[in-house]
Image (cartoon, rainbow, N blue to C red; front, side, top):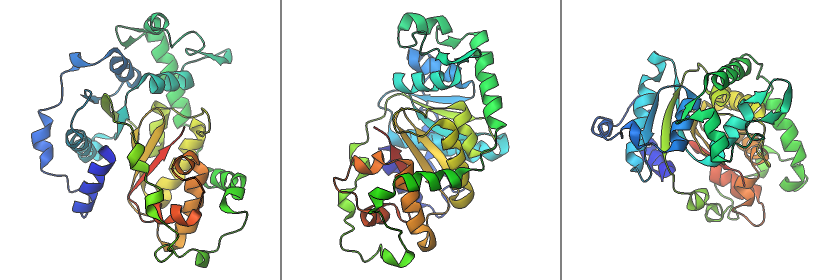
Length: 312
């Protein structure tokens, strides 16, 4: 799986951003030609409107990771931030629903007009290419989102943590109350996120033309459904996590979000971040653990260089 391959590369590289594996050169020639794309992939590429590398179903994980790292290597000079996009109808519908809204009625979107029906979808994306009027709406949305203030990430997490306080046992945790390394109850095997990760389908490595990692979600606004935070909240929290931990969105699907973390959580922040992790995405814990135990969660995520979130 992608997450395991990336972990392997991270463990083998002292600086995984600058020291790009030699495998990249051999993998570059394996990138498939564009006409192999499905209709969904063409629509997503048209929607993103940026340089993308395409990988069909069942592409080797190593090829995808090397493609990502090659993009990452070029990103600073060419002013973009790459992200792996796992293409699906659900993700496509979500980003379109969050972006293309009628200016006179925010409740009306392409989703309301029948985006799930191929006939209606084709009216907006003829042959997989977005029409001019819709592309203007998307561009206005992105410019508006990038211009907003996203400095409230910590405050949002404070509120989320308080709303989930009962799941932490109803008490305030102190730093000396959790000994992650020595706690025998913190059984990491009870919380194996990767075991149930779905096999990826078609992949785009999108080179999003933004300066800041949280601005990726102006191009891929997938939040705001079920218990997943709204897109603006995700952007604010991502900004806070980038500034504190160097967390960069790495992969996104219809219900998962992963970050690469430059500065893993240390002893001083392990309690606070454990609360943030659960408050941001309770489903990532509840799905894998019958009885929530903050000790177990802390041991699982403490010091990790990849954060995996999954909403039901």
